[in-house]
Image 1 (spheres, rainbow, N blue to C red):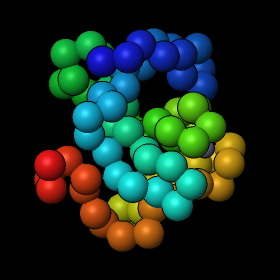
Image 2: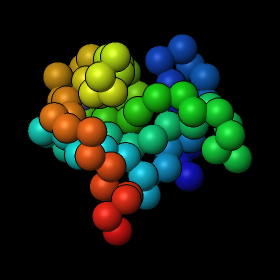
Image 3: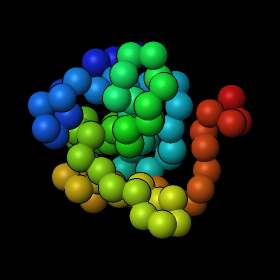
Length: 79
Ligand SMILES: [Zn+2]
């Protein structure tokens, strides 16, 4: 787990072993606590920010660099 600072200056934790593949770079799963009990969102591996949004189809888009996922493909499921 990598500790990062979120958009509201809160501490967030990035699991770089789980995530989705994006057009510009991977999105990693972000938790609000170090024990990975509370899912917070996604961390953009392209611009290194946690400022991303998930739509109703489960697609992730970065608000900073417009990185986005294409399909509901979970890299961790294949490794
Ligand atoms: Zn980004």
